[in-house]
Length: 425
Ligand SMILES: NC(=O)c1ccc[n+]([C@@H]2O[C@H](COP(=O)([O-])OP(=O)(O)OC[C@H]3O[C@@H](n4cnc5c(N)ncnc54)[C@H](O)[C@@H]3O)[C@@H](O)[C@H]2O)c1
Image 1 (cartoon, rainbow, N blue to C red):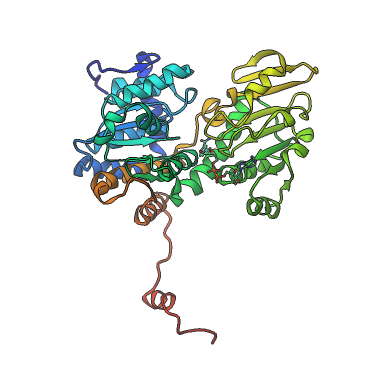
Image 2 (image 1 turned 45 degrees about the horizontal axis):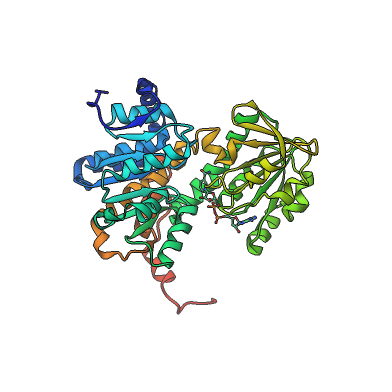
């Protein structure tokens, strides 16, 4: 891959670019839908002249999305959507080899993280692409002079969609956003199977514990929680689910899990993982009841789900026995192990979702970027669903790429399903 002339960027080490290229190529092999879209984008150039500001986890799968958008004619800058999720070789390769100036360093502090968002905004983006809505929030809080030039945006995750809906309800959101997370071909697969598997991967890489026979408490039985519970139980763990939504709690019961309040589950837990998108789900009252040696972690978007300030207050010493494990020795003599500083475990301690599911999530991103570039004028400044035809197209392309054919409705069946006349025979 030819080098691009020096561009403004901030990455850990540009000499990691060749390693990054290999990783991007490996992930690309598992992303056939995005490849089909890229080939069309190369021919049709639907994003020609569009400046895109992207704030996403800087992984090999994201790199394949960036390359696709660039193939469609876009001018892009990328920063991280979490200080710990960046893969430095990928940031180097995007910047040096693929002409996508990247501002992301794994482990960057909060000031650098927000500085990098500002560098992306310096591009004066017409389209935004967010994962958690930090880019859009910064734009509306501090860079309001740029708002007039922004046509539309997309949002990748549940937490971002919730924030953006709150902005829209306040009348604060100034441009339309497509909630990519809400596409069926996103959350049914990415949140469920992707977060499920990769969170277990992060747990094992960080600790190397055996799951069989352990009690794993999962807080939140949404899309991520369902996947995580089924993967943990598939590896032999005794899974307990905690919830605040009665329907979801009931679903967990019928799926075969024990359901109880976290305060009751705490004394039994070997591992507790939050995936709620909520704040202080693990709080002092729970910490007081965990057994010595309990492991606590989070795979929800923000590092708010575990009340870490309160844990610091009740700790007499913090040590780091392994990367991504912080052992808090409490004043009462117990030790609680926190993984990845309470940040998304699957991205901090492992590599995030497998490319196979990101293929669908990012196919939605690419097609939604094309859609908003063409239709922004027709969209009001609020949060919009992914058009159903895009969702179906992604599913159809994925099935074709997997070599799976499905039945199609006959004319008779279409008429039957659309009619009300025929009943019991
Ligand atoms: N780690 C990743 O790679 C990744 C991927 C996708 C989504 N996410 C994030 O994971 C979080 C969950 O996403 P989701 O799609 O599963 O959302 P969801 O809305 O489908 O599920 C969240 C569940 O948590 C429950 N909940 C809320 N507060 C709770 C509490 N105090 N105790 C117990 N349960 C509680 C809710 O009732 C809901 O059922 C979000 O922050 C999302 O952005 C992370």
